[in-house]
Structures are given as C-alpha cells and as structure tokens.
Image (cartoon, rainbow, N blue to C red; front, side, top):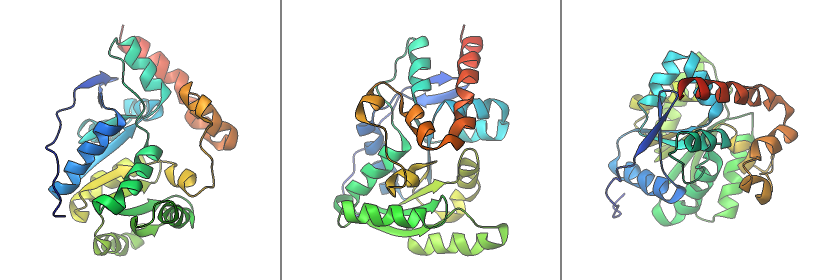
Amino acid sequence: MALSSPKPIPIPTLTVLDVPIHQTDMATALTQIDTFVQSGVPHHIVTADASMLVIAHEDAELKQIVQSADLITPDGAGLLWASKRLKQPLQERVSGVVLVEKLCALSPERGYRLYFLGAAPHVAEQAGEQMRTKYPGAHIVGTRDGFFTADDLPALLEEIRSARPDILCVALGIPKQEKFIAQHKAALGVPVLIGVGGTFDVLSGNLRRAPLWMQRLNLEWLWRLLQNPTKISKVKLLPRFVQLVRQHHK
C-alpha cells in the first residue's frame, strides 16, 4: 500500500513466566501493526492471557513461539494482576476481540485487507458479514472455518495467498493457532498474523461482550464463562497461573 506510515515504536516489555509482554496500550499496538502492514514482511502478533502462559510453561514449543513473536499484547485480568505484583503495571488490556474490530474499523481508511480463519462452521463468515455491515468499506477478503484436515491444507494456504490479505486472523484456540501461524507464516507471506481465540464468536453476534462495568472490573472472564460453560477448562488455569507467578517471581 502506498500510504505513509509511522516508524516502528520500540516498546518496553516486562517478563512474566519467562515470556516477554509488551507494555503497550491499544493505540500503540494499532500504530505498530500499521508499520508491520506497510513492511510487507510477516509479523506474528500474540494476544497473551494467563491461560496461554500456563500452557506455555508446560509446552516448550509454544513458549518459544511466543517468545519470538513480534508483538505480544496483554489480554486478560491475570496479566494485569501479575504486572502490578512485579511493580511494572500494564496500562490496559489489549484483547484480540477489540484489536480485530478496531482493525476492521480502520480498514476502509487504511485499506487493510483482512482474512478470518477458524471457529465453527459459518461463524467466521458471519463475523465478516457483521464487520462489513458495521464498518462499510471494510475489506474482509476471505473467511474459512477451522474444520480442515492435513489434506485440505495446501488448498487452504493457496486460497489465503490468493486473497492477498494484509492481516490474517486465526481462531483455532491456544496453542493450535500459534503453532499454525509459526509453521505457515513464511509460506503465506501475510504481513500480520494474529491468533484471536474466540473473537469471531463475539464479532458474529453469537456471543455478547460483557457489560462495561464487568469489563472495567476485569470480570469479562466470568461473563464468558456464564455464556459458555465449556470455557471452564480455561478458567481453571487461573489459579495455576497465580501459583506459578508467586513461585517464579518471589
């Protein structure tokens, strides 16, 4: 794209359970993503929460992938708590769902081309339709659900390349989405690749975001659990995260 772009911003990090977390706010993250898009070179963005750091503590491959990501944003109340304990308080949550919606909102102005990959059948497609309706002119250039086999992979990668997205949003769950990005980002050549978890369920309208008062109190995890009890396995990792942080950062 022949648009002017600010230079990359050096963003300081804090380390939680051997994983660097960028001390960024939403505005800075969006500026950084813009520089990544303009570069044309693949960049991996991780929206990290407490459950991811617990999984990475046990999964060396995931930990290495996250450690080498180009931007790691703090997504979740657990990380805000840990940053205060480390006396390096983070400015705010930079969640995947808000990040993706803001990129869709910027798409008409900046020309961003987005591809939605993952979630249950029709959910990514519905999310794309909702974003086009809410932000007229948003370039959602392709959607595909997360139900594909190894045999489907070559055709899927070619489909994504042919769509020429600037931003690929991958909703396959942790750690599958991060490993998919790490394995295929060079072949895909997409400038920005983001693992976005349950984002499409929210953007499609199938799940509502928590009321603002719950968001402000960092209780969005509880709202999601009430809406979708299958999330209990993820919530159960929160006490483990607290235990690990207390052991690791005495």
